[in-house]
Amino acid sequence: MAHRFLIKEIALQAGVGVATVDRVVNNRGTVREQTRRRVEQAIKELERQEQLSSVVGRKLNVDVVVEAPNRFADEIKDALEAEIPGLQPAIFRPRYLMQETMRTEEVVAALRAIANRGSHGVFLKARDVPEIADAIGELKRADIPVVTTFTDIPLSGRIAYTGLDNRVAGATAAYLLMQWLRDQPGKILITMSDERFRGEEEREISFRRALRTRHPHLSVIDASGGHGLDAPTEKLVTQALASEKDVVAVYSMGGGNRAILSALDGIGQKPLCYIGHDLDRDNIGLLRDGKIHAILYHDLRQDMRAACQHVMAFHKMLPASTVSHCSSVVVITPENVPEYVAARFRA
Image (cartoon, rainbow, N blue to C red):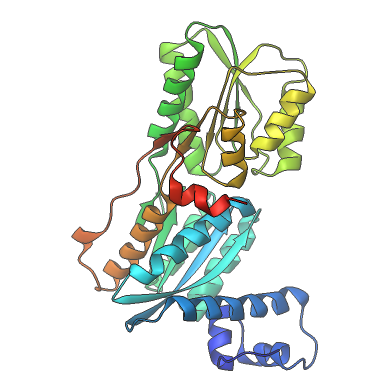
């Protein structure tokens, strides 16, 4: 395997031993396929970092641990790498562990491995459960700062949260739906990827509260738990709506919108209003096709910049007062998709 990096440099990036890297790059001995892929990914990450880091500064190795559908994980990675060149005097070198689903024990094992090998910081998107909170505490005791991103784990040792205010997002979704529905009776379908993601839970609580207070004539059907993945999401929606009629609106908090729309179409339901989250390729297409009426968006680049700045402040490279604020909720329609987002998905 051709490369121009030191074995120990690849090992540090991959989070494995130098002997393992030597076996992979020189095709010696037996290595698990998952480990081989991790080493190959580490080399690609080093190549990207080399292209991004033409400036001189202090190198900060950070671990990005994310449970999310690939479409959103890719958005996080792109946002972080777009910000890295402007984060002087630091040169961030991210190491990624991104999976569509991760068991609690997998997340805990990953965080403990980071604590053992060392890191300048961790950007974490994971469920709010006690075991993961405890693992964050272990990182804190190892003097490794953790920034939770896009969904918080507040009762842990994390140093900061970056991402939108999910309570505001839920209330905004309820407000928007009412502009379409007015006094229209019926049922609202809601979906979360997993209620143990605190961010989505906060959206749901705020959304339901707004409906109870202002629009008690509407009821909610919950089809959550599909992890934002198409097949399980479509199955859950189909099951939830099997004996239901009069679905007048959808609030999709956790993605999988093509699957949700497919399930609705399969049972002949055509909601008057559909609100989603995040501007990935699927959602931009659905928005422009009129399948989704509005997207609640937040600037991922701003959030990842803030995450990096929190780590820099922890290491005394920035005063804490200069850390960027988290992004605000922005309502996106087909007419105001940000150009820098749209340009990335043009065929």
